Length: 130
Image 1 (cartoon, rainbow, N blue to C red):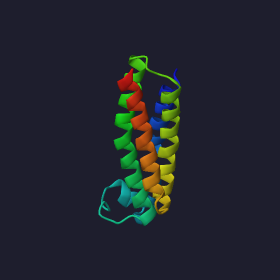
Image 2: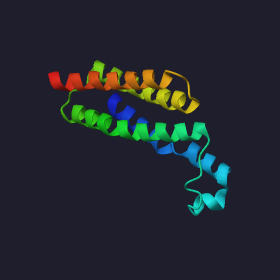
Image 3: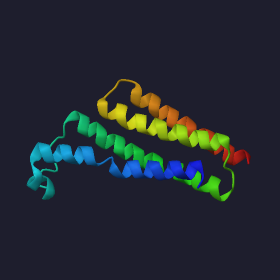
């Protein structure tokens, strides 16, 4: 398996679990029964949990284009050191994005997002010039 495909699997796996913190926060906030019966859907979450939820949504939104790039590169046999490095950078930036967004660290979210976007642009460029 290529590095790019491995990174895609890791990123998908991480994204699968990103919902847990804000769901647990909701259970703590409103109680298990109210959370399970959707009676408390309008209850506000703590700020950190709201940020975690938004970071999760952003991760899902970025997973699709990254997956497309990885799959196209794999099918077109365009994998090289640059695509592998871009994939690893993308993974690191996405993990950083989730952490700094959830913690509310100023400018961290924007820098991590920009880094992950640039990694995708590098990946795209390698596909287009192949």
